Length: 318
Ligand code: ADP
Image (cartoon, rainbow, N blue to C red):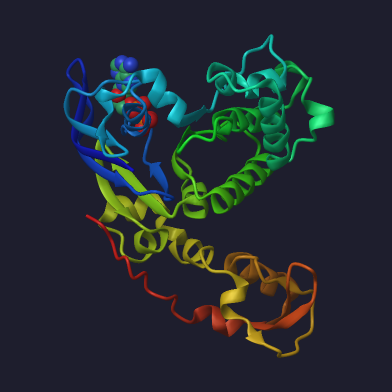
């Protein structure tokens, strides 16, 4: 879907992106991560031509991106950023409808789309459609920003630290919403963050940058189990590697079906790190497991958290 081949972008003497090659396939959720100034945002903006590269090539849908007019490219790729950039004098519904209006959609179709997107992002249309941005909390504004980026059903969603400025509770809620959108729509998403937990939670693939270059590209499990070098280990949080690895598995993966246990139940979709915490809080070595509706499924044993996780068949990419 997107291919960067030996791309370099220089600002004055400084190489913001150096000889970068990266392929994003349809339906992937690729997270670009790395320290501040490592070239993540520049890479994202090279993809929708907000930044022009000096050398190399960037292709989208099989064609050189320079063969697309920038406005055509931007309609086919939604873009959401931390500062949101909502138009302050436009209502929520007018903001979300920006690109569909540019594309000449009939008013009824735009209205239906706005309604559906507000519902998808869990904002009640009756309450929010006619509000102005200043009448929304930061988290609600971010939701509207994401809805606007999705409005014309773009093939690709590019997101630059979309949840950067939010409190932890709102941030987690929006991460869950985005994960659901990805699962439902199968859209190709490229997201920039510097938060490793966000990357591990959201990414089907993580691309770690250092000084404008790619250090490692692989699944979350591959990065955690086979870090390419000490920089990767340190970036992932050396002291917490085991816990982060647990956070990739769910209770459902390890449940002993049909077995009884005592204690406050764990939900099957909870991750194993949360389960570990529950074992300590409750002082037990096994706990009952229930499904999303609260029906009993079996038991999880503390001991079973030690079992090795399945090795990622994709393996690390260079
Ligand atoms: P990140 O997103 O990883 O924080 P960026 O891609 O924003 O990194 O920046 C990479 C490098 O390029 C940094 O050194 C930054 O200062 C520089 N840079 C980015 N944009 C510009 C610009 N418009 N003009 C000059 N330097 C820039």
